[in-house]
Image (tube, rainbow, N blue to C red; front, side):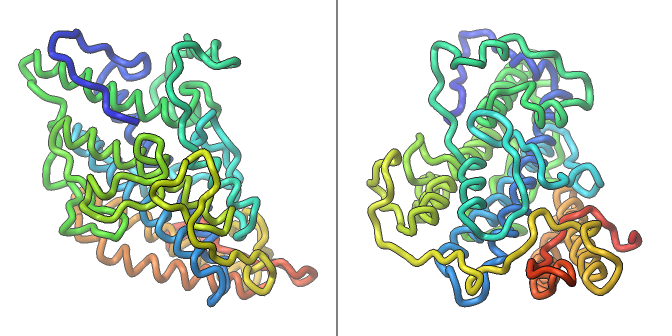
Length: 384
């Protein structure tokens, strides 16, 4: 998705659902939540791969999960830049899986926590599928979306889940881009001058956050806000809908296949080459993909603390959920002014993985072969 051009001779047009700065902030908070919501499914796919197996697939999933964390921070930076405050450490930030997520190219999809499997990869592909090119005429079945309902305050998240606001995740991000442009142009014509009134010290910078998935963008104005959103979209669906993302241009890093095409590599067991046709299977080197029990833990679907009876496994599930909640708390503090909290957050990610692997090494119940799995319930340390 490309940024909407700014034409100084044209009156800015506000998106229907972003009439003011409060609505823009609510949309950006929803973006933080949506970028996070894909991380638990990806981590389940990653953690259920046994050591020494599916090395290429594991690396693909790991790098995508890392970039989703980057996207979450980028959305938080844009929200902070326009005077908002990201809210992460709270019970309703966390989705209960299986969950209806408004992340598909054609509307909400059901996303479950699953072991590494063909079904899981199909879900990952649905999450990251590129949005179709904009058409002059509405696609069949979308005509009713021409006049969607107004969004009551505080209802955006639930309406997104039900697909009542935007036909696709691409439309959602396009509305945010248009809202940023229009509101900034309107502000420049008034005495307040800009919507970018946030405290610069709340920006997570590359000093505090860096990973091989790309440097974080410090958001201070419209151009940097649009750059941050461009990264989120293009790392997922591809640069101008090609196979590659635009890391070479944005970060001076080698371009890689965008998330959708990385997961297609797993589906085919073969790498894409940079000049491959995105509508065709990859033509690069092949790599092994093994879904057998020898290579993958047979995790139950959608593990949660409440799925296990009282006992040692339930205790381990509680510890895993608390570790995850601790991670959210550290990230919340980091994007709300305590940027150095990202350092212990990295350590906490290793603690979470250890808790997840401990669960995978235990049966989910005494009378079956299926394994327990990582739990992503919201559960602070003082709750049981």
